[in-house]
Length: 171
Image (cartoon, rainbow, N blue to C red; front, side):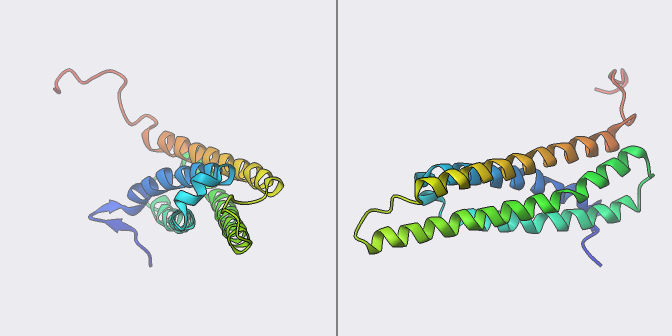
């Protein structure tokens, strides 16, 4: 038994907001941190913490969505949305793993340069380039997947659920 309803509202409808904000934010932070050591220096432990919260939010939202799926009329749009939703977790796991790799390598490089009496300039250039490229791939992939899921969810929820013209009796 999970969190299905919160104050009478399906939990999925509330949890999805966390995923829509946190996953792209984590992706953007990762791309910036992987490419710019000065940004990584400022983020510090916040980057892996953000990635962990993003990772936790996805199965929580998916589980709440599975409950909601059993309580709405099944349609092709709902099936498309749930199929796309099931594809997000691998992207976010990848995002988390790349975040941890970038964060760990930055910390290791900082320790080596401090131990050698140098400045904490960050990770060596070839490794930073590889990390930035991998971060870009995983970050953009996760962001695009969040967009695709959100778009299909909005269509499933709102298709034929409103009028394009305003109701003249309402103000």
